[in-house]
Amino acid sequence: MSHSDYFKEVLRDYKVAAFMGSSRYTIRRMIEEMPENTRVVVEYGAGEGVITRKILEQLSPEGKLWAIEFNPYLASLLEEIQDSRLVILRDNVFEIAPHLREHVGRPVDFIVSGIPFSPWAGADHAQRDETVRATHDALGPGGRLVAYQFTPLLMCAIKKHFPRTWWRFEPRNFLPYFIMVGEKENTL
Image 1 (cartoon, rainbow, N blue to C red):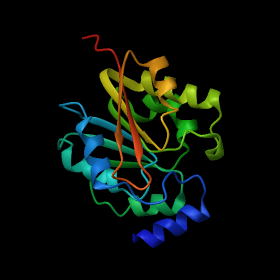
Image 2: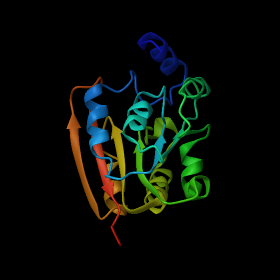
Image 3: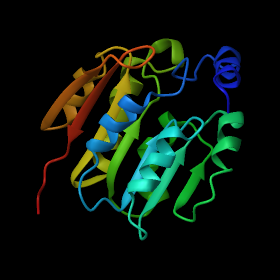
Image 4: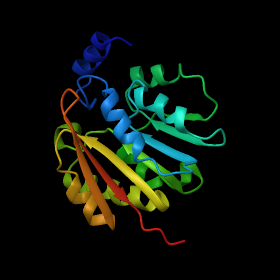
């Protein structure tokens, strides 16, 4: 997909999170947060699959990646990725997150999210909080949520539900991103 095709889709569907695909710097920072020995990954708002492809490069041959994408056009682009470890769910993250363990069938090691958690994208405060709580619940011990957003506002919800949190700022993206991480307690 060209940058102009992606931008046209953004203009057509205002709920698409970014004006352009994520930069290689942003992708690298997110992949660096993936725990060692990750086998189960979920991507909220997989878009055209830029991050999806990088995750698959790092994922073990026995791993599985569930990519959730609500936009029909972007989901069709994801279906072009030929990898048996990829499962595409054409669904709304806010609706599927509370039932994520049922869909995946086991605890998740790593969840990466590019969906906008803002009111203009249809997420009110309660829905945003519920989605972060459900994300925490879907993760296994030591599992991580990594969310990249244009503002750090989501960090409040992450801190509320995760015992260990940190963030980074990535200016080499249009627009710059806040990369926020929540790590679930490791109860092993």
